[in-house]
Amino acid sequence: MYDNGLYDRRSGQPERRQDRRAPFVAAVRTADTSGTAIALGLMQNLSATGMELLHPDVRKGRLSLRFELPDGQGTVELAGEVVSARPYSAGLQRAGVRFVELGPAVEERLLRALLT
Image: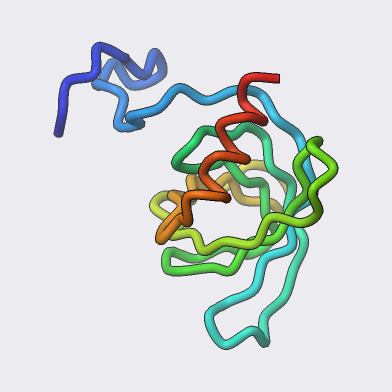
């Protein structure tokens, strides 16, 4: 575990996230690696390296993610790794998703979205 000076108030443990998150609500289309299990989720916040996702059925592992940013440049498509998942409310789970294999153009778009 690294020390980034952040603490999770709920558990009293050091925060695992390296980047600060910003509130960001958007619909997210998810698919498993085979592309057969497709579902919609709701992004709750965003950072340059990941997101918090409300989803009906999320399991740890890799996902394909598609969502819109407010920059008018079309859909963002990237891969994410579900690193945590816990029940949220009836029929939904709250998942922490870390982005993997980000290209420089997508990373730049995410950073610009966080600044707006």
